[in-house]
Length: 111
Length: 113
Image (cartoon, rainbow over all chains, first blue to last red; front, side):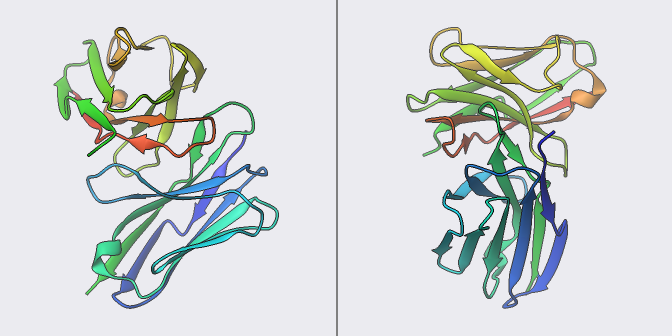
């Protein structure tokens, strides 16, 4: 079945360092979405990418959708302690309307 | 202001008991979902609900689970006879369309003892 894989599982960085999480789908995606979940919180929508090769920025966060629309990345420049949490990518199933989440990357930032 | 309110925030129940988790969307969303997250693990799809009926469900969503939207506002998830492995955080989510982003509620932490 369709799978969404995410690496790394866990990343611990020093405040000010950069961070990147990668997402790969076994099938072509119509779009990819990124969510952030703070410890003890719920997933919060960050962004949606639709076009092949699309790059979007939100302040220190850069999101990219691959040319083949099967992979995506989230890059955070100069991490801050407020960036801690789990970052999930999610893509819609090929058929149907369910969103399949990757396993998430846990980001810890040491100040 | 959250788009989805979930109650209760925490439910403790004994194995074999029935539980009902509630979700109240604030706006007139079209699509409703239940997801669950076992502690420290991924967010897993349970069921989607559109036009007052189930549109899709996962293999987790067996006969013990049911959903309904009885009064056009509350969206409920019922687990008929809870098992220990049902212990998880259950999130309600809403969306406007097929590929639209989801807005999650704060979740209900279910603990089955």
